Every structure is written in C-alpha cells, then in structure tokens.
Image (cartoon, rainbow, N blue to C red; front, side, top):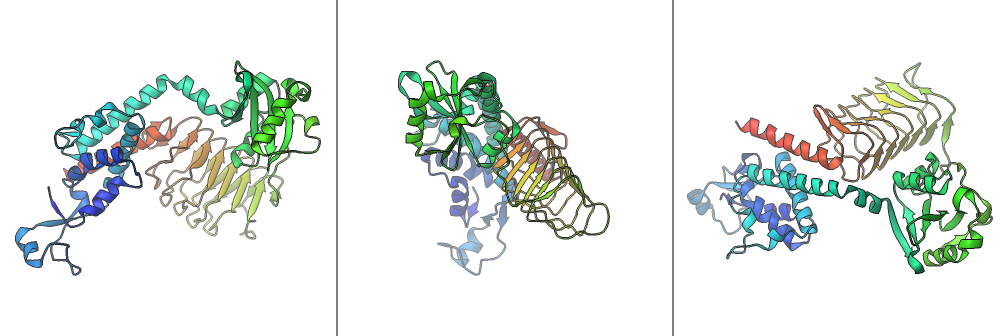
Length: 427
C-alpha cells in the first residue's frame, strides 16, 4: 500500500455524504487499497511540500519515500460513483454478506479484491442482478410507484395521488373522462396542480379531484358525474386531512381541457425562425412559441429565455456562442441543441414530448433531476458522463454506439466505457 499524505481525504471521498456505517465499510474495504494501485489518481511527490506533512519530517520523507497524494481524477470519481451505487443498493436490500466478516472485521465477500478492475466487475454484476430482480417485480413496482396513498379510510377505501403519466391514463380509462389530456399532466409535472383519486375497497377508482394552491377545483365521478351525493363524506375527509378549501362552483366543473396556468408570456402565434433575416430584438424572459422555434448557426445568440415553451419543434443547433440554457423548457415536439458547444447546465426542469438531441454539447456536464423525454435522448459527444436517476425517457438513451432504456443502465455503460478507455491508456 502506498504512503499517502492525504489518506483522510481519500477516506472522506469514499464515505461521501452517506452516514450509513455499512455503506462506509463497503466503500473503504473495497476501494481504499484498490485505488492506491491506480496511477491516474495517485500523484508522486517529488519534493517535500512547503506546508509539510503531518507526522512526517523532511528527513523521513527522503528516507522512507516515495510518498503519494490522492488526486480525484475523472476515472476515480466514476469508479466511486458505480461502486457507491452498488453499496447503496446492497445496504438498502440488507444483503446478508454485509454481516459476514472475518476475525479482523473485514467483509469476507470483499477479500481478494485488490484492484479497481476486480471491484468494478463485482459491482457491475451485482447492479445487473438487482436490475434483473427488479424487472421480475416490474408490474408490482410500477403499480405501486404510479400513485401515493395520502389518506386511509374505513372499509379499505383510500385517497391516492396520481404521480405518473400511466396513472393519469389509467384513471381516464377507468373513470371515462379526459384527465389523461396533456394539459392536466403538464400542470402536474410543473407543480401547478395535483390530482387525487378515491379508491374503493377493491382498488377501483370512484372519484377524481383536482387541487390548485390549496383549493379543490374539480371533483368528478365516472363520466364527469356528480360525486357529492354518494361520496360527500369521503371528499370532506380529504379536505379536512389536507387542510384544503372548496373553490366556488367546484362541484359543477367537469374535467375539460384546462386553460394554461402559465401567465406573463410573450406569445408568438406561429413559427419563430431566428435563422432568417437580421438579428432580432432580445428574446422575452418568458416566451411561448405556438409553432416551431428555429435557430441554426447563429453566433449572435448567447442565451435563451428563462422559461421557454414551444408547441412545435425547438431546433437550436450549432449556435456556438449560446451559453445560457432555459431554466424551464417545455417542447411539445422534438428538441435539438446539437452542436451547441457552449450550452451549460442551467436547466432546472425539462419536459420534451418528442426526441431530445444534446449531441456534441461539449460544455453540458449535468442535467436536472426533473426531466422527461417522450422519445429518444441523444447525448453523443456531449460533456455528460452521468445522468440523473430520476430521468424519464419514453424510448431510449443513446451515446454513440451505446444505447440504454434507462438512466441507470446508461450510467453503467458509461462507467464501463470509461474503465475500458482507462485500461487502454495504461497499456
């Protein structure tokens, strides 16, 4: 094992922000020694540092060297990320092998893992095994994740909140109203409204309600029927439990297409083609384009609106001086920022119903936690090396020759690719 001058820093990097003792034990016992065998994160000290080394004199430095310093390289961070994902899953699943230790307190499962390659191989195999186990329980897990219970009532009845697009579609099919129309789900994603369903003792939907800013705006039974004569006690129980009030005329409003709750926008009735003609006036801070937005190879474009809502396609490509990304991006069609090399991760929420092309956005290093792509997400040649686990994609994620159906799967593929590239460089 190398003589490290900042061993505490390496230990802190492995523990991360996780306070779980089992997590720390797995990370330290699997990677603390293994990372010290990797040249990409170990820097040899040629001279005694000006600020000294704790408990090592200048004479000892020259007599007992060499000494090394841990450097958090990209490969090391990727390794810690993958093994950390495995450790978190193992702890969450209460794996039995975590308790199986030798006389020195070392986890026997981790004995013999001397190099990062060995640790990564085990971690990736275990993550794939977990994914397989979860896939076998997909139907149960999906049903559970689609709604969240907020209030239990007598006789098995309960109020649940609709959370996913699948839940909205199922509610619409069961109740024969248009809760699955796009504006309702959009308002849910943006946090402008919440939608709840009353389930009977057999789990069947009986009443659907819409709530905005603590006001119950709509309450309907099947086929936009009036739920109050039969389900008034249950609705009032929900109001009391959540601390909501009843909006005026809420009992007579049906689930029809809602008006947008996004106010203060500059609205462009049709397409907005910034590629045609001279440089226009600065774009509005909040912009709604009822058609498509097109801006290709425009060097004068340096930022986009803080909130950008495009009902057609959003094609902002090869604008090399564009740095400022929208904080909120909604696109009903396809969105492409391909070749916009300066675009950085100022996004806070992305909602794209079609494909999202971020290929060759080399400065883009992160995506927000709140992101949904209805089609394919392309990150080929971008600066993205890790995707948020909450990313939702309707089709697939592609990165060059790599393709995955989920962020977790793509993160594993990217980690494997980084590891292979590192191995080729060493040889």
